[in-house]
Length: 245
Image (cartoon, rainbow, N blue to C red; front, side):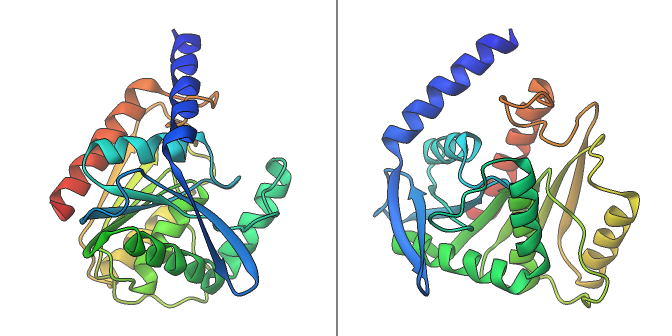
């Protein structure tokens, strides 16, 4: 059954490559290559997708197409930039770690992607951000930066924050989708995040998925949990519908 699901996922990824449009933009001299859904140009709510630590991947592309079916313009951000895609997990850990440490650079790349989402026709006052893994950390950084979005979804995201960063106001709604067996998230990470959200007077919710390891939503991962992945996606769509429609 898992092989069949993987085949379907890979087929849908091929379709995604054909249907998503490339978008070239920049951060100074660094070229960035994002992707947008085919409904760009229409006045619709917009969702920015922040991909996992290896950059734009099949899970992000499939999510974009699914969001288009739900009536959203979806834009996939390029955080690392042209020529910087990590070739393996070690390189991905190093590069994503750089942006998690230099969170202002990360926030800037997110802001640039939000601008491109609005250029693609997304209604400026109906925007949300979802992120996977490293992108889940970016979803939290979106809220911390106070960017004008109505909600963020962190999907098996990195939840830690440097101890020397103060907690501030959090005006965007926040949904945290956390796999119960994610070894990259410590109890301290979780308790600190809850304190941060409470200190910021955020509208927040955490959903924990049983029997799920870090990349539980990715059909290509050995951690994939089909039942919990489907539940997480339904929770994401319910959240987006509440805040954007």
